[in-house]
Image 1: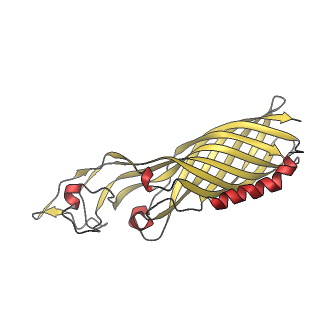
Image 2: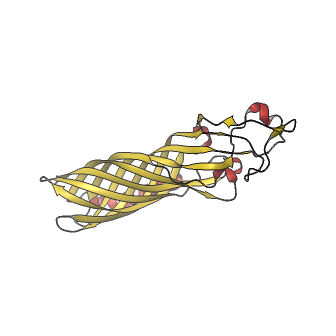
Length: 256
């Protein structure tokens, strides 16, 4: 967090003097889809093998022109993050009656659906380079900070419990495998996730003029989290969240 604040101060020192003489200021709104993914590091089974999910993203932005080709863009976005996993995987919520019967540290597996839903308020600040006459193209890149709004783990399905991922050793009582268990649940996991996520973002886009001062903007950008999202990395593994965002928006330009 301190590093991000320092970076923002540096950006202000570099860009603010130029912005006082900027030619244009644009403000707008956009919305679209988020295709996030959880990237795991290490060998912790709890955080491995997540694939992308679909989510929503939308927000407001301001674009401060420094020159005709260069500007600084700041935004406030609602960004859906997370990932999903289906198939044989670790069970993170073992019923208390069963956990008391098992040795400490025992990992059980089951075949079910699991979706980790993380929603952030993200604030990116990017340098933007644009070119073109009527149809304008641009590239932008910079840092962002994500503030966690909520986090949940949604599971569904029915399965027996196993001691191994290959489903060859079912959990038994008195020599008989336990019947299938229901995994239908929506669990709040916000307490297990760090409240702040820092990362870098960048992308491309095009802007088409409408009216005298408006633009329709198609934007595609990627984001990569630089911080581990889990608080307890020993128990829950290490993951970073990022993804692809595709949005359509409108901006109005205020001319000096």
